[in-house]
Amino acid sequence: MMRLNRISIERVWPVLDTEVLAFSELRQDELYPSIRPNQIVSYIEGAVEFGRQAGKEYEYNGDLAPLMEHIVRSDTRVTFVDEPKKDGDKLIRAQYIRKPATILVYRPSLEQMDHFFLRSGFHIRQEDLIALHVCHEWFHHLEDTRFGRTDDKLPKIVMRKVGPVMFKQPVESTREIAAHAFTQQVIGLSWYPLLLDLLIDYSERKVKKEQIRDSFNGLKQEFKRAVEADVTAV
Image (tube, rainbow, N blue to C red):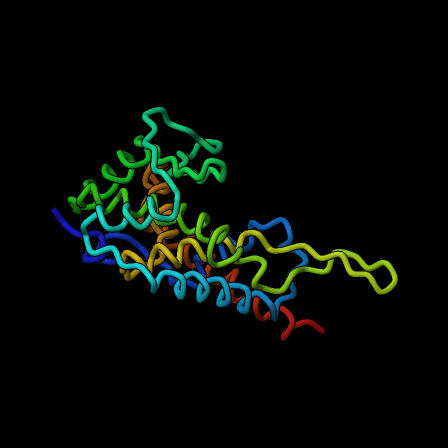
């Protein structure tokens, strides 16, 4: 059995760095068209840093019991669900329900992740896969109860003005960016967890590694163009 934080995923699969992966999350936000090019990196860096700083209070060392104890002490319960749940054609991994505070972990997602790693040559401990699922959702609970919401800590987008009054809206995708960073910090991963979701999706669709590499290179170029748009604009 292998620890998740000790595998070299880059030896088997194409990879992307944190900034580009976070950009792939940010660009799906409904407010993304309203974000100026010179704000993109600050939203990404702000969300990643917020998640990492929050994660420094906790450490998963391979023993699931202390992590679960932290979660229980925060008045949150963890429930495992046998039936799959999907968002489109993708399995939902876990969900956080606010009242009563509950983290739902979907077993089909654990199985899918386990099969992916086995096909990749890694026999990962089940406890590590569970930790990966619960950490992400637990962060959202901690946002509600301890740290405050990530999107409230970052600048809001001005949607309209009526006289001196400005109506602003938070960039909600920054919460997901921060949750991935929190999970990475707590588990001690060398790679940003969103990478795993992308690789599993490609693997399930039987996309060849060369095509994945091309797709990742395209995303890198899109990120570069997005942040440089204000520099090149006439």
